[in-house]
Image (cartoon, rainbow, N blue to C red):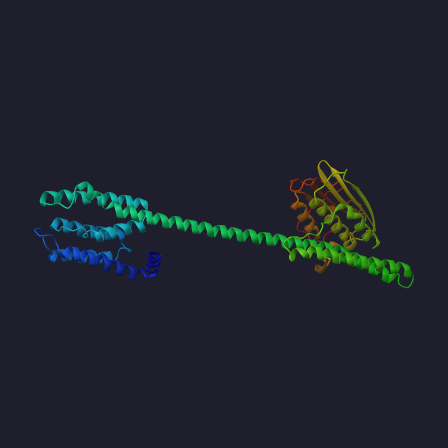
Length: 416
């Protein structure tokens, strides 16, 4: 732990301070070795100290010019050997320079530097062996020592690159997790917004129609008015219940509220009929066990289509059909009447996301939705959903006499 703290403190120093500290330490050891030589060999002189000064001065620039520093310190080390100096620490400056070349460079430069340094060291050893009675070492050994700092620097540099790669991978993984979490949040927001839109658009529209019936019949037919207001109260209670179930997902990690099923279509149709629109319901799933998400999607599509009939159409009759054909659930809602106003006359405040929401719901389970006017009057919405959740399928053409339009960006003001 003490060595780790010391290394951390050294790395925290400014580069120039760290370089000067390295020069001071290397200079202390090299100076001591150069000043004292074995008897019978050349003692320190002006050339010795000149080579020492040049070597240490070059070592101070090792980060900026690592290869030239290796050349200068290597020449000084060779000069000492050829001048007749015997010392084990005289090659310390070139060792530090070789280490720096490997740490700050790449593998190719390290290989070239090692080959040249080993060759020069071997040639100097051969020359010294002929001129000096007691050479510093065998040529083979002299060729090996320059490779040691290079190998150490290569190991340190490779370790740093691996640590940097691991850190980059961790950062990318964290970014991916954050993006995935944000994507799921956006999807949940869209889902909750779609649920709330379906609930409010249908229920409030039905309540508005029922309240209008009650107001018109208040004096002439009190009993009809009473029934209409009773239906308004029931619709309001149902809306509150569904809103609580939908918003509970924002309060808890997982909502336990049951999703709407196809067997609740009778209640949905009854609510619409209470507003004055007659609805015929045909439901034939042939006893197939449908996934809950498919049933909920079909229910919401029917709910939104009937809401559009009440809000945007002058129709007094509508037909709902939910059948299974060829491994798909076919949902159709057809009304008989024209739009209550021309599409361009619908104010922006009344344009919503009903058709877009139906398409998003169908696509989410692997199905599709088409809608369009019926020749002679009326409007048709046709959805095809897979009977197995998540199985992609393409919605086939609606069985209308006229060509339907794809459920796309148009606003609800353009079609119910």
